[in-house]
Each structure stands twice: as structure tokens, then as C-alpha cells.
Image (cartoon, rainbow, N blue to C red; front, side, top):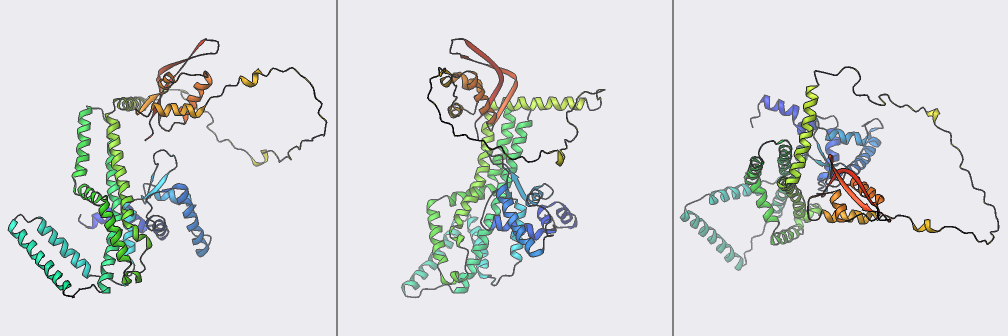
Length: 482
């Protein structure tokens, strides 16, 4: 990308990272987000936890800078940072919950990494980086060499160097790395480990963008199903076969190896115990940095899994037809609205109730009244005999709500969706209308459901007297929770 004036001006106006650096409260945003996300390597936080942490941060800052500093509330700041015009936080709803969660955007992580690089370092190592560059060039040169004679000569040269080193060690000449070289390489290891975690959010963002594009295309597609599937699989293969996809797959295969994990753990334990490294006081969490890589990689894998789930649901004809029917209804509503845009009907055609605000004045509230204390008289109870009908105590209808919920979950174990009528047909109603109402209550609380008002389902049950009762209800389709 050419960094000319036009490009830089466009980035200054639109890129979230540049907006963060120009923000009035940039020190608050960068410092707080680094403390809660980067330092503990947290990938997501619920809204309640994030707001609570920011309230603590604001309290400390107001104690230092005065009560007028940062006049907004923590909730306001969090929502502002997640807006599209800022783009510093990603707000999303995990599956199975209605509470928003937040994560850093790749742009924010880049800003934090850049700001961290501005701090003055007590020691700047150059030897390890030069050796790394040299080693990378040698790997590329050897890996692209097609002449077998050249490669064999290189391997023989390396074997001769190894033999010479073995001979020196057997002769008592053991070369050791000095403290400066150890610190140099350890600093480079720290930098690469942090950059690796930073890159994960960008890789995940790219896969998430593909997932969103697939969802939109499935919802709006009106052509042949095979054509759409071919395009989607083509894009997914393009991502998987890209340099980024291949590199991530190779990284994941390498890290998932049990042998490699044990080797990493042993090397980290050995290096962190060296006296020059102990003197640097490294973070104790560095001992398990490879597990942080695994955790970050799992998030990317989950995003890829969601993409596969979208393709699987697309292949399900029932879900396909339901999505198409919903989109057809929305298109009809949109077409009618556009047709009526220039031809508004005369008179009142859509009355709205309560268009004015309901105001409750403070003096209209009832005054506090002391609760009446019951007066208990000490009366002696006399024994007596009274004829009462106790049948009403045993005629109560008890509906086991947990059992009905279990029936729905069992019906969804082998399929992705089931209608409420199918559940009732498989488990006939034993308590009549009360049990049906309980089923409807459970359906209302179900996280993923579709109500088809155009189609009716009939359910029936037998009363205690043997009479058959029937009820009609809209078709309610319950979906298996993702």
C-alpha cells in the first residue's frame, strides 16, 4: 500500500486505530483495554464485568484528577467505544445468552502493541534478530533449491559442522552462551510471542467476515441452490488455501501435537530457570504462553466451525425452506411499503395508541403507610366434628414442567427442528389443557423458535370422562440450540 497523502488522509479519517490515537480519552481507552484484555490474555468479557472494571478505573482516576474528570458513566463509555464510528471494541452475543460480550478489535490490538513499543527499552538486542534473519534466508534458499547436488552439499557441510562441535564437546570444550546473548534471545522470544497473540485476532476477524458474508448471501439468495453452494465452498477453499489459511493450519497442527507441547513446556521451564533470565523478572504467565496460543487458536477454530454449521444448515432442506419463506414475507412487506411510499392513503389509516408520554408527578404517589400489625388473641381451641369434602384436595392438576422440557430436548436430539404438535403427538397430553398451556409457555421461553401463523396444528386429548377435546394453534417450530 502506497503511503501517499491521499491514503494517509483516508486512514486518518476512517481507520479505528488512527481514531483511537486521536481520541480525547485515548490514555484511558488504551490503558484500560490493555489492563483488562491484553495483560491477562482475555479473549472476551461480559458487559457486566467490563462495566464494573471500568467503574473501578474511573473511580481511581477521579480520585487523582478530580471529580470533573471523565463525566460519563462506564456503561456510556463502553457502548461508545463499541459503536461503528469508533470500532475499538467488538460487541457480540454468544450463543445461548442475551447478555452482550465484548472483545478487542484487531485495530485496537495493533494500537496497543505500537504504544507498547514506544516505551524505552533498557536493552536492545540485535544479534538474535540478525541470526533469525540469516536463518530465515537460509531456510528459503534451501527450501526452494531444486538441484539435489547443491542440497546434498549443504547437508554434508552442516553435518561436518555438527561433527566438529561434537568433537569439541567430547574434548572438554563446551561453548556456552553468555548472559548478553541469553537476554538478547529472550527479548526476541517475548516480542514474537506477543505478536503471535496479536495476529490471532486479525486471523479470526478475517474468518468472521467470511462467515457474515455467507449468512447474508444465504438469506438473500434467490437463484439455484447448487450455484450458491459452489460459490460458498469456493470462497471457503480460497480462504483455506490462502497464505494466511495455510500458515494458520500449519501452526495449529504443530501446536496440537502432544509431543510439541511437552517439548515447549520443558524448554520454557528450563529457560525461565536460567539466572540471567530470572534477573529480568519475566511474567510468571510466560510459563504457559503456549496454552494462551492454544486458547486464542480455539477461538479462530470456533469461527471456522460456525461457518461449517452455516453450510450444514443450508444443506438442510427444512431450514432452507423456512429461511426462504421468512425472506419472501419480508420482501413482500418491503414491496408493499415501496408501492405505498408515493401514494399515502387519506385519513387515519394506522392509529397509534399512547403517542404522548405518561407523566407521573411525585406528589401523585401514595404516602407511606405503616403496615397493619395483626392482633393475635389467646383463645383456647375446642375440639369439634365438622363434615367437609376433602376431594378437592386430591383433584389438583400438577404438570411436571421439567418432564415436558425433557420431552422437547429428546425430540431435538436426532434432528435440528421439531414442531410443538409433533412433540405432543409423541407424548400425548395427560393433564389436558393445563399441560398444553405449559408446553406453550416452554415454547415461548425457547431460545430459537419460529412461529408460523399461516399454518395451524391440531392437538387433542382425552378427558377423565372419556370425551375428546381438540385445540388449534399456530405451528411453532423449535430449533436445536447451537
